[in-house]
Image (cartoon, rainbow, N blue to C red; front, side):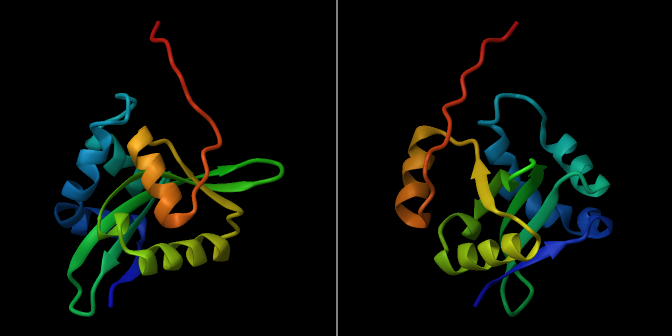
Length: 137
């Protein structure tokens, strides 16, 4: 059975080659705000959190990154990237939700494409909160 584990910032560089491919493809749909090397820097600096799906043999099967957004009435775990088994395994999502609650989180959010939004709603109970539009200047 796989478990969700948090990777402390000081160990990100040591396992980066095992998780990069899970995260890189998600950034292809990010709008270009930052790239995979920027994400690595955010993780090493502690600006975002790296979580991995790891089995009993210490094999990594998925990864996710979260940025905490703190508001007066909410502490939001904003999912910035995810890939691999983290995307489809309900048990891993339950573990993730527990971890978010244990860290003071009141909700989880993420900016996703419409197809992913429908998937997240059907499989994990997410509900659309906003539609974000943008005009480049």
